[in-house]
Every structure is written in structure tokens, then in C-alpha cells.
Length: 221
Image (cartoon, helix red, strand yellow):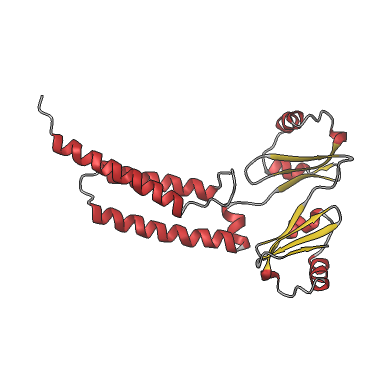
């Protein structure tokens, strides 16, 4: 049997180049600011990147220049999407998502659970994983963007809520603590903060508003 070492050698070279390109691409363009969760945007990026690399490795008609051009264009598009996701509220909602409160003040939001397709049995299993066996023990429960369940039991200290994220006001978070945007802006004026865009994060915890500005200074209420 005749083996064409040139073809296999060329494929090995392309494979090495693809691995190198994948590592560089993942380091530069894949959103890593979401801690451990795999966001929809990250899934899309990885899926399309694997398709591009597979086509480059297996298709003999694609040369190095074409591959570099495609990767460069793809990287540019992903960079734009990453900035759109990080710096805009609508981008964050689309590609990462917001926490979904399904229990507030001990009251279960049945309609939201139905919309999220969460059955009572699945919710009971999640409760038991948090060592909670009765609905009466619940104060608050929410589904995080990564699918995990956060639960606050009755009698526990109040949970923290992010009301401003990178200059964007989270209205749903304000609803959780029974506050309004008007109240938030009034609290910011008390701290002599006029521009919300100057705020990296503002957190409501134990009745106090804690603020971290983009210049790294910290304001505690």
C-alpha cells in the first residue's frame, strides 16, 4: 500500500496551525469575564470556531492566506460582539441573561416558573440540594444566568443585589428590594455622583448601598 507522506505531513502541519490558532483565538476573543458559566455567546463562538478549524484541516482547497483572513474577520466580529455584550444592557440580556426570581418574599411566581419550564418536581429536587424541605422555609429563590439556583431561607440575612452593572441600572434588581430608579438616583446624588456611567458596580446589601467607581474608588452607604 502506497502512503502519500506529503499529504499526511501537510495535514499534520495544518492541524498544528489550527491548534495554535484556537489557543490564540480563545485567549483573545472568547469572553472570560463571566466566571465559570458558559454563556450562549461563548457557546456560539466555540461552535463556529470549531467549524472553521475543521474546514481548514479537512479541505485541501483552503490555503493559509484564506484561513488567516477568515480568522481575522471572525475575530473582529467577536470583538465587536464582546464589547456590545459588556458595555450595553441589551447585549448583556441577549448573550448572558439576567437572574430570574421565582420566589419573592416567600411567594412562588407560578407563571414565571411555567414560562421557564421549571416543574414543581425539579424545583423540589433543587430545594433538597440546598437542604430545604419545606416551601415555608423559602424567602427568595432565583435562577442565575448559568442555570444555578440561589436560595435565601427565612431568617437569613438579606441577600445582596447588584443594582448597577457597568453603568447600567438593573430595574429588575430594584424591584427585588422594593426600590425605584428615582430612589437610586437620589442616593447617588447624596454621594455626589452625577453620572451613572462612572459606576462600575453598585450593590445593595443589608440596607446599605455600596458603590465601586470605574476609577476604583469605593463608596459605602
